[in-house]
Structures are given as C-alpha cells and as structure tokens.
Image (cartoon, rainbow, N blue to C red):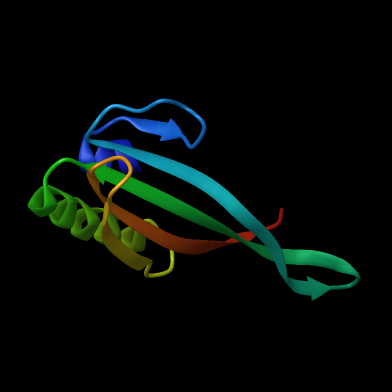
Length: 103
C-alpha cells in the first residue's frame, strides 16, 4: 500500500535506508471481540515512518498516505511531523490500526 501510494521504497526498521523512503513496524496485535470462548476479531497497530529531504514533499506524502490508509480500511492515523536533527531529514510518523476478523 505504501509503495503504491507514494512510489518510494519501504524498509524494515532495522535496514539501512535511502531517501525518500518509508519504514514500517507492527507494534501491537490485540484481541478485540470474543464469542463462545474464542477471539472473533482482533486489531493490529502499525507505525509508518516517512523520511524526506524536503519539508513540502514530506507534508504532501503524509497527506497522500493518510488518505490511502483510510481508503484501505485503516483507522484515520495520528500524524507526527518533525525535523530529525540526527539524520538531518524531515520525518512524518503515521500511527494507525486495522480490525481483522478471525476466520
């Protein structure tokens, strides 16, 4: 979804990256709905980091990805935008979740 929406590479958080790029990490899987002693539905939470050299490009990418996530059934993400002094890059972090039904 990220690569298609923004046309940039996507990396695991532990990999070296090039710019612009996105990193993604699953940080929570949580049971949500129980019935007859088993989990009927669960949610997964993800954090997506966008890395850009240009502030305006970062802002546009965050806006585009936010729309793509909502269209794909994710909850509207929380978006944090800032300049990362260590990497000297403009960053945006989008935190969201999606409910998954158990089969």
